[in-house]
Amino acid sequence: MEKLTLYIGNKNYSSWSFRPWIALTAAGIAFEEVLIPFDFPAGNPKFKPISPTGKVPVLHQGDIRVWESLSIIEYAAELFPDKGIWPKVAADRAVARSISMEMISGFRALRNACPMNMRRPKAKIALAEGVMDDVARIETIWRELRAKSGGPFLFGEFSGADAMFAPVVNRFDVYDLTTDTETLAYMAAMKSHPAWLRWQEAALAETWIVPEDEA
Ligand SMILES: N[C@@H](CCC(=O)N[C@@H](CS)C(=O)NCC(=O)O)C(=O)O
Image (tube, rainbow, N blue to C red):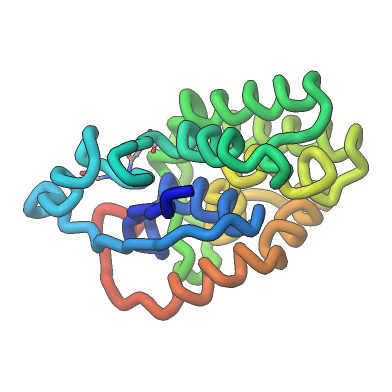
């Protein structure tokens, strides 16, 4: 099989990069990682030759280009069907994909107000309208799925759905958005996953500041 190369942005801030990176890493899939730092003032010119959308993440495999975080996770699941990226039961896979799509298309109030920031010291901010509605919906998703699966992750074992929500776990944490014990238990499981710890260690070592993402 031709090697996989995943292009990502800054680990401290690039929430969309974090999703496929943690999905592939948690599944034990080998890939080369290329980090291209953000350069918003110049329009991120280095993303343009590598990605059809001019955005990261993007996966290269020979001539193949796969962009959009969830499509990269889906492609990896097709290449490695035995790695358990999606739950084993079809009905669970359907729900895993539904909540992954809900993540991509929704929760805009939360995503706009509270950018992912692995380095940020935990502190509350004044929250825009709608943020706590997003938090409530996400807590319902997490609570119901973990109650059904028994946890510690949404479908028991770590899956692509957990990967899609990983940056939200950081947001809940650093903006101090919840005191719910079930939510905190899920966040603790995510934050102690070896793949999370690897990403976090690299993010904390970065020194780039992206003003757009400092809420
Ligand atoms: N829907 C895309 C979003 C990709 C995206 O917005 N990536 C950001 C980084 S987290 C980016 O490349 N921004 C650079 C730009 O917009 O110039 C996905 O799921 O991959």
